[in-house]
Length: 170
Image (tube, rainbow, N blue to C red):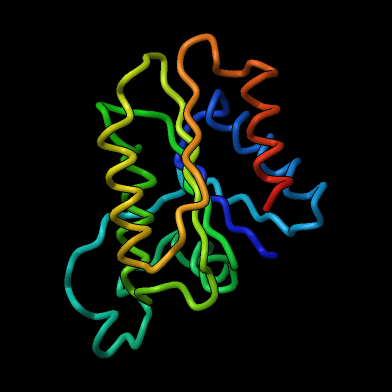
């Protein structure tokens, strides 16, 4: 299975550790994983100009790093979203990438999705999880799982092992 991971963190910290654990477990199971560091890319927000659904025929009028994301999104059998929690939601960088996927609409091949979230605090995930679940439902993707790490769970071997085991089980 081809898996595209959209890492929405602009840093190389707790979210990246979760992404790496997922990639290791998926690779052990024989899956092909491509990690896209959308949190470090230059991706502008959707302008709602309609170009993609008119003259653009599935391409965006804006020319930025989404051109690096789109091929992996089109070819993936599974999409994994990863983000630190910022103000009770997904990072702005990941939100911009998710919204710009509107250019092609539903993924061509993907049938599953998962979410990895990192935070310093417990109980701050509701908004991010709702955004993810609404997005997955709209795209017709099966919710394969949501994994959170808060406080001392971040970077803990127990949490990373849980994520590796999940990825191996796919």
